Amino acid sequence: MVRGMQNRAIESPYLVPSKSLLELLDKELRQGVQVRMLTNSLHSSDGILPYAAFLKYRRRLVRSGIEVREFKGPTPRASTSTSLRIRAVRFILPVIEGQL
Image (cartoon, rainbow, N blue to C red):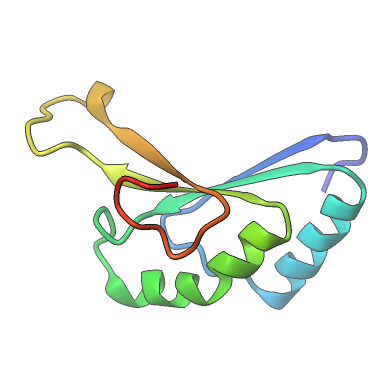
């Protein structure tokens, strides 16, 4: 990754981090880089297996200082992409609907 960057954003619909990625992110966090990740929530995912694999890592990512966000998906009455919502996953896991 590029030296001197203070922010890192990772976006993936199927986020299952490898051991080498976890090690790299731990190193960057120790260097003061702010890391954010965006992935699908169970509600917005079309595959339960990738989401289940992500759950194995979610707590570790959040506890290490990574800001993890899950794409919640469109509201039932939504007809455009402007109504899409993102839910922040921060300190308490698992996320209970309506709570952070």
